[in-house]
Image 1 (cartoon, rainbow, N blue to C red):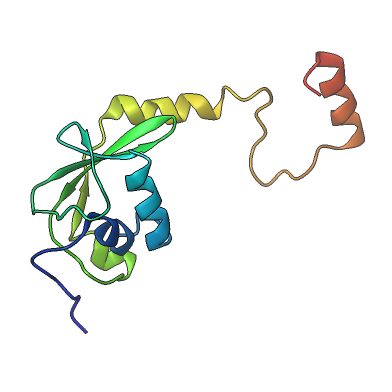
Image 2: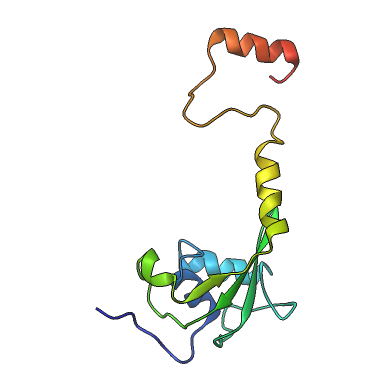
Length: 129
């Protein structure tokens, strides 16, 4: 089945359809809280999109930037969504995320589970817990 494409679509519906937000109400709340910016202006959920618009999405600690390639009206699979959105976030913003991974008080690799009693005591000795 072909994806449903419209000429005029609300930004909150598009954000949901291209999987930037899990629900449409989350996309609406992001617009209301000035987390969605087009042309340096916070937008309302009812703003209509055009192909070629540059959208900035504030997701602390970075601001992601996307280009609208198509106006998708219904939520589709992630493979189909790639044809409707282009991520043009600057590399400096993405580097902030990488740096923040290691800024936590204690960095622990995923999958190692809870610290053992000995590891916990070592962390307490270093003042982390």
